[in-house]
Image 1 (cartoon, rainbow, N blue to C red):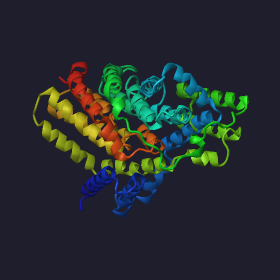
Image 2: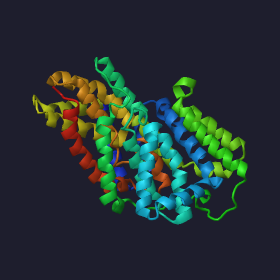
Image 3: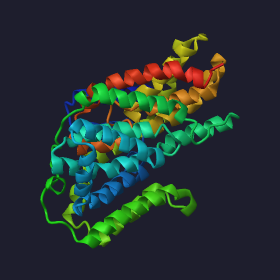
Image 4: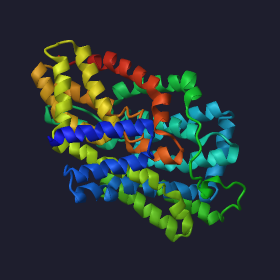
Length: 421
């Protein structure tokens, strides 16, 4: 059988198992990996390469760095301070969204999400607000912040930037904010007026005692100061990553090592904080993205999109089709894989239809950052999955209406901001 057809069958089977949750979601991801190996689509070496993936290192390290704030009692102090501003759970949800948005506009959104997990769990332990609701609000915030500048979702945005520059266009550090800001405003008011009511209230399946203990003895002052200085150092390191020549994941890993070396976290505390469900879920789905590219399955999906557009010169139809294809693919293959796959394809579609390829690249990029309805769509979505005790369907049930609003806004606004003709 054609390898591309086999890959698409595996993709559909994985989607069905994810949505129905007949099996644990991380197990489905690993079965997907195993199926790709057994059918010869990917090699065993390619299949396990994800365990050394820089994103996996980044998310594990940042959870430990953020966990140091919890262990030393800093998150409890932050929670008490936050209560002065946000006295109700609804207000805290909005604060969580705004914090995620602001931080991820300046820093890598995966790092921000990982760092916020212990804070949200600490707020739950201190004042009883639902950590899962705060995590989902924070997740939506970091996704919005990643669309305000090129920094937040740096990998995805830089792929688009490089492609547009190669086509002779310009795409500055705040160009994506032209559409990112309206989308953030829409998300804010959606959450304020409606979304807060449908955020899932879940509890982790396996409670980590380190995150559920309350009233424990406060850590020595030097440990509190050290944990704050370490995380401040991580922020500065990420801001000047290019200048110092250290990638985000290495900065995070060094910080996590320092946290352990200073004895802020010890022994089982370290292992209890690492959510292996998140790791297996992320690693298990990486080979599928590679298979979609190497087998030509992604090209088949794109060909269908081009056929739907046909010879149409309707800019709204073309925008809608490209958005839907990119958004669909990102739910199961991650946004980075999706935009890598689609950039050359949408350029070809643009040339075929006689419209601006750069405009289609922007459309595909924005759509790829709308992984709202699946925990495997991007690292921030995966990070909150196990820590928040979510089910796969929670993402869709909660966020489908926001995704629909964003889709409508993009179809209307993108052709105006980046004309196709």
